[in-house]
Each structure stands twice: as structure tokens, then as C-alpha cells.
Amino acid sequence: MSITGKIKKAVAIAESKAEKTFTGEQGIPVHYIFRKRRSRILLVVFSALNSEGPRYSYLSVTRFLKMNQLFIRDDFAGLGTYYLGPDRSDSVESEVLDLIGRTAAAAGAEHIVFAGSSKGGTAALFFGLQFPGAVIVSAAPQYYIGDYIQSVKKLHPSVPYILGKTAGEMTREDIGWLNTRVSEKIRTDKHADSQKCHIHCSSKDSTFELHVQPLLKDLEEAAIRTELDLGSYEEHFEVKNHFPGFLRHVLSEISDSRTGRDDPARSKGRGTE
Image (cartoon, rainbow, N blue to C red; front, side):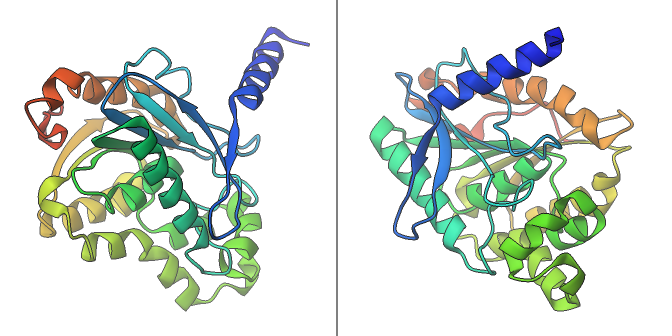
């Protein structure tokens, strides 16, 4: 076995030992890893797309952070369902919301930060927009989930779980419904004045024009404070190399001492471009 293979195996073993399962009223198991810290902040990290199968994202990036950490794995079907389904229901969403709420209460967390890149960045928006005072750190998210799933064949096995039909049976209405999952949260957001979004993307990433720019427009219209961090790398997959530094930068300004005086949603980013 190669050194890389040994490292991956060691990581998988460590993850399996730390992993727990939550099952709420919907009866859907949600796998997660929780790191308890003496802190009034809870960081929630969602899974990015991984071609090797559903995995946790950025575990090593946040290992030494002095805040509570909750990692939620998107392993409900295929390579991930954006935490949607089954059969167009809100059952997975309800379970994840319940897990976040219970974890925050148990940890005594007064502030929640939602983070992720790509698919995980979409989830950070989807769930973060439902919490007052949320800080959302999202990199290269897919704002129009339906368009993206339709264009990425490796996500097609997830469609039967999300919609109750195969990718080939998706209608324009199905795609439209998926496309509005995040925008619906923006439209119905009751906590916009207390939230803050930090969005990162490369100007050369295809998701910037297709997804991020429309997202920024809707966030602005909803009066949700938003700061954009713009990179210049070529490919979407490179976001995994740039997101850790961006996340650390935002989190470095959200400390317990600061939240004792201010709402963490008022922390400054690296500047709007």
C-alpha cells in the first residue's frame, strides 16, 4: 500500500471511531462527528462532493480551533443529496436541523457558524439562513442545485432518493424545484438583519457566473450582509486548496472574547470585491 493509501486508511479508521449517529422524529440516521470545546461558538461543517464516496470535510483544518465543532456527513444516497429528500420531503432537513439545535444547546453555544465548500457551501447557506445571528462561510456553492445535478453525471445516482425518480425522469419542474431550495430560504428569511455571509469563489470558476453572481444579487436584495472573497485559480476542484485559509481567516475574527462584546455576524471579512 502506498503512503497516500495508508494515510487515507488511517483517516478513515479515525473517522469511524469518532463518528456517532443521530436519529430524530423522522427516523433517518444522520452521521456526525462532534468535537467539544469550552466555547460559546459552534462551527457546523457540511460535506463537499468526494468522488470516493461521502466523506467528512475539513476535519484536519479545524482540529486545533478553540470552538465546538460539528461535522455532518451527507451520505443519504449516492455521492450526496445536498441534505435533501427523500422523495422531495423535508425529512433529512428536519433531522439535520434537530441535530444542530440539540448540539448547540448541549454545548451551551450562543453563536453558530455554518461552513462548507461546493456542495457543502450550498448546505451552509441552506441551513445557516434558518438561524438568527448565523455566520455563513461558503465557498463556490451551487445556488441552482437542479441545474448542477443535471449537468454532473456522478450525482445522478442521488436523484432517486431526492426526487423519487431517476435522473432520466427529471422534469423541468423537478429541476426548477431543486433550483429554488436555497433561494426559498433567502426569500423566507426572518433573521436577515442579524446574519452575515462570507462568500469565496474564483472568478475563473464556472460556478461564479452561473451560481455565485445570482446568489450575491439575491442576498443583496434580501439585505443580508455579505462579503465576497474573490480568487483567480482556474478549476472548481481547486477550491478545496483555498477554502481552508479563507475559513481560518474568518474564524480567527470570531473568538469567545469578541462575542462577549459583539454579535459575531459583525466580524469583518477580507473585503468585498
